Length: 260
Image (cartoon, rainbow, N blue to C red; front, side, top):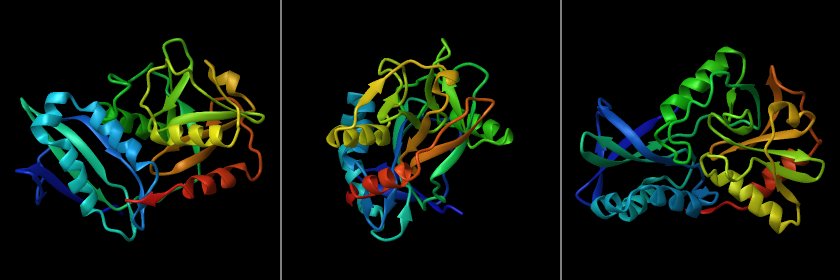
């Protein structure tokens, strides 16, 4: 079971909250990352994504840079953690909140389904505003026997799943959705694609329907789990797997972890 401590940024420091009233609170920006024994993957990209998503006036008012540094200082340097930073709004006030959470169980595979009711996202390029909606999407997918649900554009093209970015392999070519498709800028996807470029692996962007991903090796990627392979797509296309490729790339990603 995950354990959580909550802190509010006030007066230039993080204040522990014994009780957190979420009434009339909306999350405008959020970011989270996996920490194991004081190391994390691409933490600078997480910081960049979070701070760049905060309006300039909010950063000046709340000193978000100092908030970020204070949050990192609170993370223990041993054990597995999944901290989250948030910019919240309550009425006209903006609040910076830090959640220090023990990491949930991690997995290297999952089952997907297709979300059938159109695109549920309202602010698809920013992580935060749609978190509750995507949790409901995932809960609905779990009721159908899946772990996550794949979101399609209005034209029926694959864009991301409820909590992760997606990439797929066509032979030795690593493919992903078109950059113009609106979605959260996944730090894990960016890291995998950067590593692929460094290794000389060809990458390609394409607009594909679920049926056009048939017989590819499909990966779902986020900060908690890293790279996961999709072993089944309920009511979707058949998928493939090249033995050993997932383990190799997960090891490569782990090698890129750096101290906080």
